Image (cartoon, rainbow, N blue to C red; front, side, top):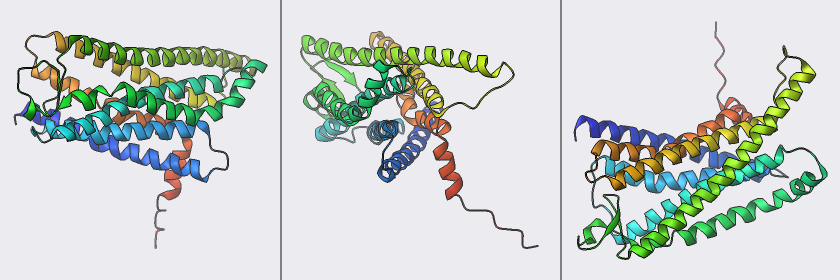
Length: 310
Protein backbone atom coordinates (compact mmCIF):
# COMPACT_ATOMS: atom_id res chain seq x y z
CA UNK A 1 0.00 0.00 0.00
CA UNK A 2 1.56 3.29 -1.14
CA UNK A 3 1.22 6.66 0.58
CA UNK A 4 -1.79 7.74 -1.53
CA UNK A 5 -3.75 4.57 -0.77
CA UNK A 6 -2.81 4.89 2.91
CA UNK A 7 -4.08 8.49 2.99
CA UNK A 8 -7.41 7.56 1.42
CA UNK A 9 -7.70 4.58 3.75
CA UNK A 10 -7.17 6.84 6.77
CA UNK A 11 -9.77 9.35 5.55
CA UNK A 12 -12.42 6.66 4.98
CA UNK A 13 -11.64 5.03 8.34
CA UNK A 14 -11.95 8.41 10.07
CA UNK A 15 -15.29 9.13 8.40
CA UNK A 16 -16.59 5.68 9.28
CA UNK A 17 -15.54 5.63 12.94
CA UNK A 18 -16.47 9.24 13.69
CA UNK A 19 -19.75 9.15 11.76
CA UNK A 20 -20.86 5.85 13.27
CA UNK A 21 -20.23 6.92 16.87
CA UNK A 22 -22.04 10.26 16.44
CA UNK A 23 -25.02 8.75 14.62
CA UNK A 24 -25.44 6.04 17.27
CA UNK A 25 -25.34 8.74 19.95
CA UNK A 26 -27.99 10.79 18.11
CA UNK A 27 -30.17 7.72 17.58
CA UNK A 28 -30.07 6.80 21.28
CA UNK A 29 -30.58 10.44 22.32
CA UNK A 30 -33.72 10.95 20.22
CA UNK A 31 -35.10 7.53 21.16
CA UNK A 32 -34.71 8.56 24.79
CA UNK A 33 -36.37 11.94 24.14
CA UNK A 34 -39.29 10.34 22.30
CA UNK A 35 -39.79 7.56 24.86
CA UNK A 36 -39.74 9.90 27.87
CA UNK A 37 -41.99 12.59 26.39
CA UNK A 38 -45.75 12.51 26.99
CA UNK A 39 -46.23 14.20 23.62
CA UNK A 40 -43.19 13.46 21.40
CA UNK A 41 -42.06 16.15 19.00
CA UNK A 42 -42.58 15.02 15.42
CA UNK A 43 -39.22 16.40 14.34
CA UNK A 44 -37.52 14.20 16.97
CA UNK A 45 -39.10 11.13 15.37
CA UNK A 46 -37.83 12.20 11.95
CA UNK A 47 -34.33 12.95 13.25
CA UNK A 48 -34.21 9.54 14.97
CA UNK A 49 -35.18 7.93 11.65
CA UNK A 50 -32.49 9.91 9.82
CA UNK A 51 -29.88 8.82 12.40
CA UNK A 52 -31.02 5.21 11.93
CA UNK A 53 -30.63 5.47 8.14
CA UNK A 54 -27.15 7.00 8.50
CA UNK A 55 -26.16 4.29 10.97
CA UNK A 56 -27.21 1.53 8.56
CA UNK A 57 -25.30 3.24 5.74
CA UNK A 58 -22.13 3.35 7.82
CA UNK A 59 -22.54 -0.21 9.16
CA UNK A 60 -22.92 -1.59 5.63
CA UNK A 61 -21.30 0.62 3.01
CA UNK A 62 -18.93 2.19 5.54
CA UNK A 63 -17.48 -1.13 6.69
CA UNK A 64 -17.21 -2.43 3.11
CA UNK A 65 -15.50 0.72 1.81
CA UNK A 66 -13.13 0.80 4.80
CA UNK A 67 -12.06 -2.83 4.33
CA UNK A 68 -11.68 -2.28 0.58
CA UNK A 69 -9.66 0.91 1.10
CA UNK A 70 -7.21 -1.03 3.27
CA UNK A 71 -6.62 -3.58 0.54
CA UNK A 72 -9.05 -6.40 1.31
CA UNK A 73 -10.69 -8.01 -1.74
CA UNK A 74 -13.11 -10.89 -2.32
CA UNK A 75 -14.08 -11.11 1.37
CA UNK A 76 -17.80 -11.60 0.64
CA UNK A 77 -19.74 -14.40 -0.99
CA UNK A 78 -22.92 -13.93 -3.02
CA UNK A 79 -25.21 -13.92 0.02
CA UNK A 80 -23.07 -11.39 1.86
CA UNK A 81 -22.99 -9.09 -1.16
CA UNK A 82 -26.75 -9.27 -1.68
CA UNK A 83 -27.61 -8.59 1.98
CA UNK A 84 -25.10 -5.82 2.74
CA UNK A 85 -25.44 -3.90 -0.52
CA UNK A 86 -29.24 -4.21 -0.37
CA UNK A 87 -29.30 -2.78 3.16
CA UNK A 88 -26.92 0.00 2.08
CA UNK A 89 -29.02 0.97 -0.94
CA UNK A 90 -32.26 0.88 1.06
CA UNK A 91 -30.69 3.03 3.79
CA UNK A 92 -29.43 5.48 1.17
CA UNK A 93 -32.98 5.79 -0.17
CA UNK A 94 -34.29 6.22 3.39
CA UNK A 95 -31.79 9.02 3.91
CA UNK A 96 -33.08 11.09 0.99
CA UNK A 97 -36.74 10.32 1.86
CA UNK A 98 -36.25 11.27 5.52
CA UNK A 99 -34.37 14.47 4.68
CA UNK A 100 -37.23 15.35 2.33
CA UNK A 101 -39.82 14.57 5.02
CA UNK A 102 -37.93 16.72 7.52
CA UNK A 103 -37.81 19.68 5.14
CA UNK A 104 -41.53 19.44 4.34
CA UNK A 105 -42.42 19.09 8.03
CA UNK A 106 -40.33 22.13 8.98
CA UNK A 107 -41.68 24.19 6.09
CA UNK A 108 -45.25 23.53 7.27
CA UNK A 109 -44.28 24.21 10.90
CA UNK A 110 -42.97 27.74 10.20
CA UNK A 111 -45.74 28.59 7.71
CA UNK A 112 -48.14 31.44 8.58
CA UNK A 113 -50.87 30.63 11.08
CA UNK A 114 -53.74 30.93 8.65
CA UNK A 115 -56.87 28.77 8.84
CA UNK A 116 -55.75 26.64 5.88
CA UNK A 117 -52.27 25.99 7.31
CA UNK A 118 -53.73 25.37 10.79
CA UNK A 119 -55.70 22.39 9.51
CA UNK A 120 -52.60 20.88 7.90
CA UNK A 121 -50.48 21.50 11.01
CA UNK A 122 -53.06 19.71 13.18
CA UNK A 123 -52.98 16.60 10.97
CA UNK A 124 -49.22 16.61 10.35
CA UNK A 125 -48.00 14.76 13.52
CA UNK A 126 -50.27 11.79 12.69
CA UNK A 127 -48.60 11.45 9.28
CA UNK A 128 -45.00 11.10 10.48
CA UNK A 129 -44.92 7.40 11.40
CA UNK A 130 -46.95 6.31 8.33
CA UNK A 131 -44.62 8.39 6.13
CA UNK A 132 -41.53 6.70 7.63
CA UNK A 133 -43.13 3.27 7.14
CA UNK A 134 -44.05 4.15 3.56
CA UNK A 135 -40.46 5.20 2.84
CA UNK A 136 -39.29 1.74 3.95
CA UNK A 137 -41.78 0.03 1.64
CA UNK A 138 -40.86 2.23 -1.33
CA UNK A 139 -37.12 1.71 -0.98
CA UNK A 140 -37.34 -2.00 -0.23
CA UNK A 141 -39.24 -2.41 -3.51
CA UNK A 142 -37.18 -0.02 -5.65
CA UNK A 143 -33.88 -1.67 -4.71
CA UNK A 144 -35.01 -5.26 -5.35
CA UNK A 145 -32.55 -5.45 -8.24
CA UNK A 146 -29.73 -5.84 -5.71
CA UNK A 147 -30.77 -9.28 -4.32
CA UNK A 148 -31.35 -10.43 -7.91
CA UNK A 149 -28.26 -9.16 -9.75
CA UNK A 150 -25.58 -8.47 -7.12
CA UNK A 151 -22.92 -11.13 -6.67
CA UNK A 152 -19.40 -11.69 -5.43
CA UNK A 153 -16.53 -10.98 -7.88
CA UNK A 154 -15.40 -14.56 -7.26
CA UNK A 155 -18.44 -15.76 -9.24
CA UNK A 156 -18.03 -13.30 -12.11
CA UNK A 157 -17.02 -15.28 -15.15
CA UNK A 158 -16.08 -12.19 -17.11
CA UNK A 159 -18.32 -13.17 -20.03
CA UNK A 160 -21.29 -11.07 -18.90
CA UNK A 161 -21.79 -7.34 -18.70
CA UNK A 162 -20.82 -5.82 -15.36
CA UNK A 163 -22.64 -2.52 -14.85
CA UNK A 164 -21.32 -1.85 -11.32
CA UNK A 165 -17.95 -3.03 -10.00
CA UNK A 166 -17.32 -2.23 -6.34
CA UNK A 167 -14.20 -4.47 -6.14
CA UNK A 168 -15.75 -6.44 -3.26
CA UNK A 169 -19.12 -6.93 -5.06
CA UNK A 170 -20.41 -6.43 -8.58
CA UNK A 171 -23.82 -6.04 -10.19
CA UNK A 172 -24.25 -8.03 -13.37
CA UNK A 173 -27.24 -7.51 -15.68
CA UNK A 174 -27.28 -9.09 -19.12
CA UNK A 175 -30.25 -7.10 -20.47
CA UNK A 176 -29.68 -3.49 -21.50
CA UNK A 177 -33.44 -2.84 -21.16
CA UNK A 178 -33.38 -3.99 -17.54
CA UNK A 179 -30.39 -1.77 -16.82
CA UNK A 180 -32.18 1.22 -18.35
CA UNK A 181 -35.37 0.55 -16.37
CA UNK A 182 -33.47 0.32 -13.07
CA UNK A 183 -31.52 3.49 -13.83
CA UNK A 184 -34.66 5.43 -14.72
CA UNK A 185 -36.48 4.24 -11.60
CA UNK A 186 -33.64 5.14 -9.24
CA UNK A 187 -33.09 8.50 -10.92
CA UNK A 188 -36.80 9.34 -10.75
CA UNK A 189 -36.89 8.57 -7.02
CA UNK A 190 -33.85 10.70 -6.26
CA UNK A 191 -34.90 13.63 -8.47
CA UNK A 192 -38.48 13.56 -7.14
CA UNK A 193 -37.49 13.74 -3.48
CA UNK A 194 -34.68 16.21 -4.14
CA UNK A 195 -37.17 18.43 -5.97
CA UNK A 196 -39.57 18.29 -3.02
CA UNK A 197 -36.89 19.06 -0.45
CA UNK A 198 -35.46 21.87 -2.57
CA UNK A 199 -38.92 23.42 -2.97
CA UNK A 200 -39.60 23.16 0.77
CA UNK A 201 -36.21 24.67 1.60
CA UNK A 202 -36.74 27.56 -0.82
CA UNK A 203 -40.10 28.24 0.83
CA UNK A 204 -38.43 28.24 4.24
CA UNK A 205 -35.82 30.72 3.04
CA UNK A 206 -38.64 32.99 1.86
CA UNK A 207 -40.51 32.70 5.19
CA UNK A 208 -37.35 33.28 7.23
CA UNK A 209 -36.44 36.32 5.14
CA UNK A 210 -39.90 37.79 5.68
CA UNK A 211 -39.72 36.99 9.40
CA UNK A 212 -36.31 38.67 9.64
CA UNK A 213 -37.62 41.84 8.00
CA UNK A 214 -40.60 41.95 10.38
CA UNK A 215 -38.36 41.47 13.41
CA UNK A 216 -35.99 44.20 12.27
CA UNK A 217 -38.95 46.51 11.78
CA UNK A 218 -40.27 45.85 15.29
CA UNK A 219 -36.97 45.87 17.19
CA UNK A 220 -34.88 48.22 15.12
CA UNK A 221 -31.64 47.58 13.22
CA UNK A 222 -29.51 47.75 16.37
CA UNK A 223 -31.20 44.84 18.10
CA UNK A 224 -30.85 41.12 17.35
CA UNK A 225 -33.66 39.31 19.19
CA UNK A 226 -33.16 35.68 20.12
CA UNK A 227 -34.26 33.32 17.38
CA UNK A 228 -37.30 31.16 18.09
CA UNK A 229 -36.84 27.35 18.21
CA UNK A 230 -38.80 27.00 14.95
CA UNK A 231 -36.42 29.42 13.22
CA UNK A 232 -33.34 27.58 14.49
CA UNK A 233 -34.83 24.25 13.39
CA UNK A 234 -35.64 25.66 9.93
CA UNK A 235 -32.06 26.88 9.50
CA UNK A 236 -30.81 23.44 10.52
CA UNK A 237 -33.02 21.75 7.91
CA UNK A 238 -31.94 24.19 5.19
CA UNK A 239 -28.29 23.42 6.01
CA UNK A 240 -28.97 19.66 5.86
CA UNK A 241 -30.78 19.91 2.53
CA UNK A 242 -28.08 22.14 1.04
CA UNK A 243 -25.36 19.71 2.12
CA UNK A 244 -27.29 16.76 0.69
CA UNK A 245 -28.00 18.41 -2.66
CA UNK A 246 -24.38 19.57 -3.09
CA UNK A 247 -22.92 16.19 -2.16
CA UNK A 248 -25.44 14.27 -4.28
CA UNK A 249 -24.80 16.56 -7.25
CA UNK A 250 -21.05 16.05 -6.92
CA UNK A 251 -21.55 12.28 -6.61
CA UNK A 252 -23.78 12.16 -9.71
CA UNK A 253 -21.39 14.20 -11.83
CA UNK A 254 -18.36 12.20 -10.70
CA UNK A 255 -20.14 8.89 -11.33
CA UNK A 256 -21.09 10.01 -14.85
CA UNK A 257 -17.47 10.96 -15.54
CA UNK A 258 -16.16 7.62 -14.25
CA UNK A 259 -18.71 5.57 -16.20
CA UNK A 260 -17.80 7.29 -19.48
CA UNK A 261 -14.02 7.16 -18.97
CA UNK A 262 -12.27 4.45 -20.96
CA UNK A 263 -9.38 4.32 -18.51
CA UNK A 264 -10.50 5.16 -15.00
CA UNK A 265 -8.13 7.27 -12.94
CA UNK A 266 -7.42 5.56 -9.57
CA UNK A 267 -7.26 8.99 -7.93
CA UNK A 268 -10.74 9.95 -9.21
CA UNK A 269 -12.18 6.59 -8.16
CA UNK A 270 -10.79 6.92 -4.63
CA UNK A 271 -12.02 10.52 -4.38
CA UNK A 272 -15.50 9.38 -5.40
CA UNK A 273 -15.49 6.63 -2.76
CA UNK A 274 -14.41 9.06 -0.03
CA UNK A 275 -17.43 11.29 -0.60
CA UNK A 276 -19.93 8.39 -0.51
CA UNK A 277 -19.97 8.51 3.31
CA UNK A 278 -19.56 12.25 3.81
CA UNK A 279 -23.21 13.20 4.35
CA UNK A 280 -23.91 10.32 6.72
CA UNK A 281 -20.71 11.01 8.66
CA UNK A 282 -20.96 14.78 9.06
CA UNK A 283 -24.66 15.69 8.89
CA UNK A 284 -25.11 14.71 12.59
CA UNK A 285 -22.81 17.58 13.55
CA UNK A 286 -25.23 20.05 11.92
CA UNK A 287 -28.01 18.57 14.07
CA UNK A 288 -25.94 18.68 17.26
CA UNK A 289 -24.88 22.27 16.64
CA UNK A 290 -28.48 23.44 16.27
CA UNK A 291 -30.14 21.41 19.06
CA UNK A 292 -29.56 23.04 22.43
CA UNK A 293 -30.98 20.01 24.25
CA UNK A 294 -27.95 17.98 23.21
CA UNK A 295 -25.53 20.58 24.52
CA UNK A 296 -27.53 20.76 27.75
CA UNK A 297 -27.44 16.95 27.99
CA UNK A 298 -23.65 16.93 27.63
CA UNK A 299 -23.22 19.61 30.29
CA UNK A 300 -25.52 17.74 32.67
CA UNK A 301 -23.82 14.39 32.11
CA UNK A 302 -20.24 15.66 32.22
CA UNK A 303 -18.60 15.34 35.67
CA UNK A 304 -18.14 18.53 37.66
CA UNK A 305 -14.54 19.63 38.23
CA UNK A 306 -13.06 18.72 41.61
CA UNK A 307 -12.81 21.68 43.98
CA UNK A 308 -9.37 22.98 44.83
CA UNK A 309 -8.38 21.34 48.15
CA UNK A 310 -6.36 24.38 49.10
